[in-house]
Image 1 (cartoon, rainbow, N blue to C red):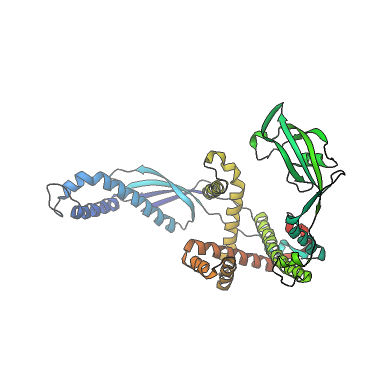
Image 2 (tube, one colour):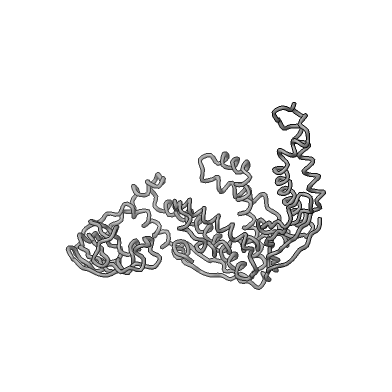
Length: 430
């Protein structure tokens, strides 16, 4: 077998492979002989079909199968011979497929990039410093009380945290549009559940007030047919109400499993739950900073074949999540940036693992499985499922290895502290 390798791009390679005719002919004869012993043809006893009959009947089909298998096997041999790491499947271009001549074809493919990792010791990683204050616990108590909020009608002007009930009708260029009108619609001011332009018009209104105003729908509005259009809304205020939270008495506390109704015990329970959530958020925060730093400081070419594969995977995931059946509504451009980021980070993580000989920590895998299973009624069955499912187990091991890489980076990098309040860290994008 003769192999000629040509570099045709940063990552693209073109390999011309020539296979002696004898190799193809020998493989074809072996298959025909095997077939002659197994094939059933009318007029001949099993195993006694002459080779010329088998060749005449099946020769063309067998030749095509042998050529396809030979190209596949010799491509793999050539890849190993040239010590290449292909990214994705090759494009095969046959040059000569004559039965009595050497088989010759071109395989065009991309290879994985060489990654020269940036010096991690020069990277700064922010570590979140967050404390749970008494005010945070009180805010959590208010959230628990909110579902039982009692609304009392008032005569004053509406302000933040009041509930305003309105009738509204919206039109665009004089025409009413779908979803633009509703009666007895309640909105808590400051909740952010309506467009800001609309909600701000409800501050300082009083009962029976009527007013009209214009709202411009944002460019990324979920109803695409309304995006960037200007609508005129006419509203009537039906009532303005102030909220009254239920008392923090023993009956309220007992609803959360504290039999003696002790408020301090409920606060301790809340603080414990908040601490668990906080640690998870802090862990996610530092992982996000580590991954962003790795992405920002390591630049290299990405194989287009891998980008296309990742785009397709992201598209299928989105189609399942938002129940879209038409792929044309989810073009490649929607996923390209995220696909490139995922591939880049995957390659960087792989390079860190390989160059630093990081080994998967089996104890951490067990801990991760236990954490996943802890939210189920029968955790042992969940753990057994993962242990017996290769794909599911691989996803857990991949997650653990990512965490090990994060720990490795933190040991190498410069660490800085960044302070947050509990509310802004847990409830806002930071």
